[in-house]
Length: 630
Ligand SMILES: *[C@@H]1O[C@H](CO)[C@@H](O)[C@H](O)[C@H]1NC(C)=O
Ligand SMILES: *[C@@H]1O[C@H](CO)[C@@H](O)[C@H](O)[C@H]1NC(C)=O
Ligand SMILES: *[C@@H]1O[C@H](CO)[C@@H](O)[C@H](O)[C@H]1NC(C)=O
Ligand SMILES: *[C@@H]1O[C@H](CO)[C@@H](O)[C@H](O)[C@H]1NC(C)=O
Ligand SMILES: *[C@@H]1O[C@H](CO)[C@@H](O)[C@H](O)[C@H]1NC(C)=O
Ligand SMILES: *[C@@H]1O[C@H](CO)[C@@H](O)[C@H](O)[C@H]1NC(C)=O
Ligand SMILES: *[C@@H]1O[C@H](CO)[C@@H](O)[C@H](O)[C@H]1NC(C)=O
Ligand SMILES: [Zn+2]
Ligand SMILES: [Zn+2]
Image 1: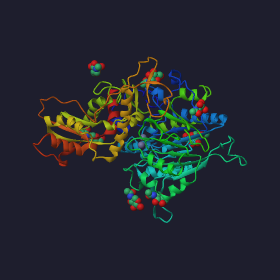
Image 2: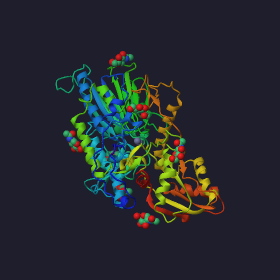
Image 3: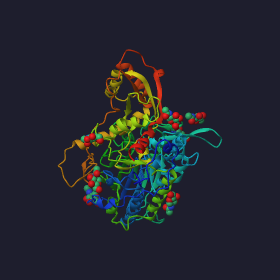
Image 4: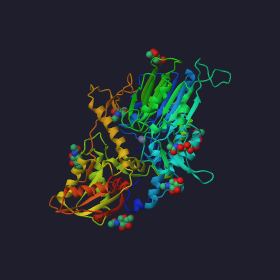
């Protein structure tokens, strides 16, 4: 129900359905216009300064959002965002100040529009092909919507660096569109030059020096005779990401700041250093400090604003009192705001402000002084038209069934009826794999990693887009036959005790760091006991280290329950002397190792591992919904 679905007419039957159903022409998704009235409104106008910034990060293709709890608070669509931007640009003109639009990367991998093509590949295999152009590239579809926002500076994310073809598309297509504004200061791609030689070149541009409209006397610098507008030197800096695709290069930030081109670029003092990048603003994996220090050595007081991302949290720090660093959350739930007053030759604290806006039409209308009649722009509506086209092309509203209730990752305890990890491990996966196996009827225990579970399921239609969003990974199921009952049932607690094996999958680990970090952030919010203000709606309650209150709308914290790394299907009856041990191939090595740890009667090897079913992990939710939610 990410794009509020229509109810598919009639029940669908499995087998035939999965293999042959072509996404039907369906009424387009409904946009959550009506939410506007039901949402809490901001009450504090934004602080505007000389330079104002709207910042997004980790959008991961979230162009439309569900209608159900808790999402209305973050239910702005890309149409709404585009409309907001247009009105804010008008306000900046009226106020005679500058407005910059920034994005810090990770636009790939999330919902349907950002996954469409790779998923379509999958479906060619199962016969559910829906005609994406051969040779198309993952997330090119989402890129087209992105391009309709006139960003001033963008940077690349790790999700644009997992597959060479995707990075190449950013290089040849996306970066071209943004003409020098897509900054990849420390990220290169290897391509063939005109002579057929392999060369390493920046994916986008290494830096951007530009002049903004207003000069220090408040006049427009764009006019030829007026004073020069203020100058900005911008970089786009990726954190020290190490599991990027072959033939892409991420230069460690420590090395970047020693490059002579970098040092040359920062010699001249601009009015503002603008650092945008897929890089947490603080913590272990943040690399901003060394960039900041390098600039500060030359320019002790020049204003520096930093716009990071990657950890999917709202965060703000000040590396000194003439700088501010902001992270604007994830999934178009949050739109970040920062303002700064420039004080030419000043040395005291800068007047900086930041705000985390809940991304929804109510927020947008409040801050732009518009209403439902005046807010939505034609360009915004055109984006919705484009989304209609896209969902038609890829059948994103194809509905497998109707979820009877919400299932959440961390807002319900595990195990419980409302827990997504319980649902997947105890119902969905065991059901689906049992529909296609020669081991049918033989008791088994199935081990599932919660790291594959990406987002809550909400009550209502379960569409293809929801499946892509909630449980997208493609893994095969394997099993070891006739494992002694005691050993098979000891696997789960042992693996949870050991934790996911680090050595096994570096990519997985980097991904898990984001998810675990985000969950720690939620847990910290839930742990703060707040006066139970009945008026407050649930949502993010950010506490960061910048002055004042960051959240635009006060919320009560979301309930939070920790989930284990691994979960399992219901344990078969203990009267079974031996049972099948089933698992997906992602953690195969750790499963075998653990199996050899919990028993010593024999040594299990890869030769004992057999494919359990042809069904893969990204299919199980659809199969289950089709059978049980109709
Ligand atoms: C989101 O907004 C709605 C108002 O529409 C509110 O009732 C709800 O509590 C908020 N948060 C969550 C988590 O549902
Ligand atoms: C990387 O690029 C080189 C050319 O420089 C090419 O020979 C090689 O096949 C590429 N590797 C992969 C995995 O694409
Ligand atoms: C990136 O590309 C530039 C331009 O070709 C090259 O000079 C530089 O060495 C490359 N950097 C890395 C880290 O590969
Ligand atoms: C910062 O700017 C705001 C808005 O212009 C103003 O209200 C406030 O007094 C300023 N703060 C300081 C410390 O100058
Ligand atoms: C409308 O959207 C399409 C893509 O869906 C885009 O190519 C076109 O430029 C847009 N037109 C306007 C006027 O925004
Ligand atoms: C959980 O679901 C089961 C089966 O539908 C039901 O019997 C049980 O009462 C539910 N438990 C709770 C606490 O709602
Ligand atoms: C599982 O599905 C595959 C592919 O549709 C089919 O060839 C195979 O016969 C099925 N196996 C069982 C045991 O149902
Ligand atoms: Zn991300
Ligand atoms: Zn990231």
